[in-house]
Image (cartoon, rainbow, N blue to C red; front, side):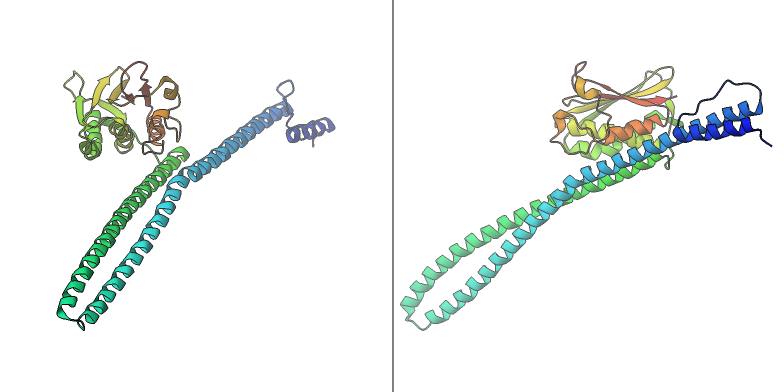
Length: 337
C-alpha cells in the first residue's frame, strides 16, 4: 500500500496538474520520482495536443471566413446581373406586345381606308405606311439594343459562375492539402516534360493575346530530373504560367528557363508585365493576397499560395524576384533532385 507521504504527493501532483502549476521535484531513482517524470511528460503532451487543437480550430475559423468573404463578390455579381437580365427581358416583352398591338391597329386602319375613295385611300395608306415603318424601325432598334444587353449580362453571369467554380475548386484542393487528406507523392520525373505540359495548358489563353513562349533548357543534353509529383507540380507550374500570361501585354513574350544546382532543379518563369514590388514580394504567397497593381484584373489570389503549399510538400520552394531587381515579373520554382 502507499504510504501517507506518497498519497500526499500524488494528491498534490493532481491538484497542480488541474491548476496548471505542476513541476517535477528533484529527480532520484525512487518509483515516485519516476512517476513524477512520466506525469510531467503526459501533461506536456496534453498541453501540446490542446495547442494543436486550438491552432486547428483557429485555422478552420479563418478558412470558413475566407470562403464566406471570397464567394460573396461573385455571388453578389451573379444576383445583380440576373436582376438586370430579368429587367431587360420584361422590357423586351413589353416592346414585343406594343409591336403586335400596333400591327393589329394597322390592319383595322387598312380596312377602314378601303371604304374611302381610291385617291384618299392611296394617300392615307402612304402616310400610314410611312408612319408605321418609322415606328417599327424605332421599336426594332430598341429590341436589338435590349438583346445586346441580355447577351452582355448572360456573358457576365457565365464569367462570374466560372470564377465561383474555380474558387470553390481551389479552396477544396487547398483544404485537402493542408489537412493532409490529399497526398503529394514525389518521385523522380522529367522537368522538361513538366514544362512542356505546363505550356500546353496555358497556350490557348496565350494565343488569344498573341503571347509567345521562349523555352531554354540546361546546357547539359541529358534530361533534367528531379523528385516531384507530376500531377500536383503541374498544377503549381500552371498557376505561375497562367499569371505570366494574364499580366503580360498583348503580343508579349514569356520566357521559361530551366537551370540546376547541386540540390535543386529550377524553373524560371519571366513575363513582361508590371512585376512585383519589393513590398508585395513579402506578401505575394499569402492566401487571397493580390498586389496593389493588379486589383482590377480577374483572380482570387489563391494560385501562388497553392503553388507554395504543393512545392513545400515535395521539399521544394518558390521564390519571387521583385521589380526592384529586374523589369517584369519573375518566379523561380525549385524542385529537389
